Image 1 (cartoon, rainbow, N blue to C red):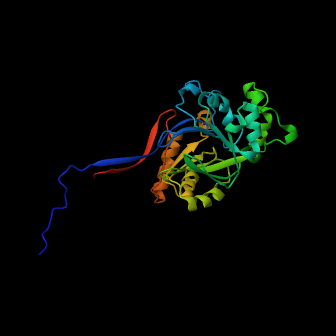
Image 2 (cartoon, rainbow, N blue to C red; image 1 turned 90 degrees about the vertical axis):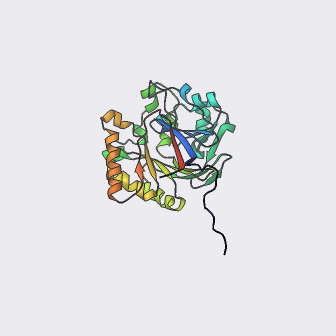
Length: 288
């Protein structure tokens, strides 16, 4: 008869293990700083110097890539300052690429122009791009202006000339995307109003997390529905800084989102990151 053995090896076993997916921090508006495994750093929609007084470009850890969803000034203001500091590549829609290069005086070779609904195999990640549609709140409120009525918003707000054409194109050309790291961790980014179309793509891609525009008229129940529709494990906000102006408590809002997800039987979670605080998202194993 075959002799039985103990299943346990004599050497010590590990009780925990972790594989880092990303490190990230939220800064302001749609600006996140994301560090991939291996150290490549991505900055999204950089709007810092015109918005906050307790964080500066010098506080960024890097910017190998700057990804622009669209070209309103509260999404691209610090593109040149960050490029001068880190000399990364600017990823933007091809329709606005020439204007970005010329307005911010960045060499054309540092602009990585992309199209909608394409896949780009970058050295450090894969980028999938999708059509975006800017939020039409002003149209809903009846305050939207025809081209003949448009004023120079950037000149009025910040005293900076020459950005008017980029501001106009920012209302028409917008990009959403999914970034897949080398270890197959998928980060979905979505802003604007065409969410359900985007969610259909996400059901095929199956991202792990989604950073989603928290439109001010979006109820906690609707935000929870969007989380479920995309099939993600975590949803985090961007462009939610308007709550600072309206006085809305976004921490309470996200508690309601999580309560709604629980009520729906979802295991997904909504998370509202503390600005400037670094977070680590990882896949871990531990004894229980």
